[in-house]
Image (tube, rainbow, N blue to C red; front, side, top):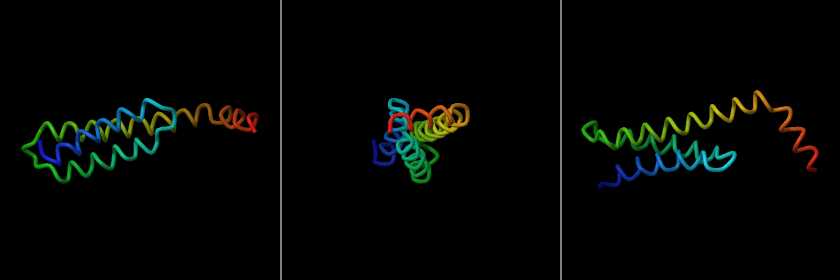
Length: 86
């Protein structure tokens, strides 16, 4: 396994980890960036690495879309909650 395949695996793992804690936006962005780097570096013959990189990118994008949807639907209640805490 070469370093390029490892980057693709890390991208997928970070994409999965972004779902494990609330507001894992930085992990989702990192998954997208690492997946993009892996896709640029991995040759087209390495199909497994390409799939892993795409998986990381997709998971990162899905998480960001999920968070944006939550904020659109429940944004006012979230802001209320934070103002009550202070």
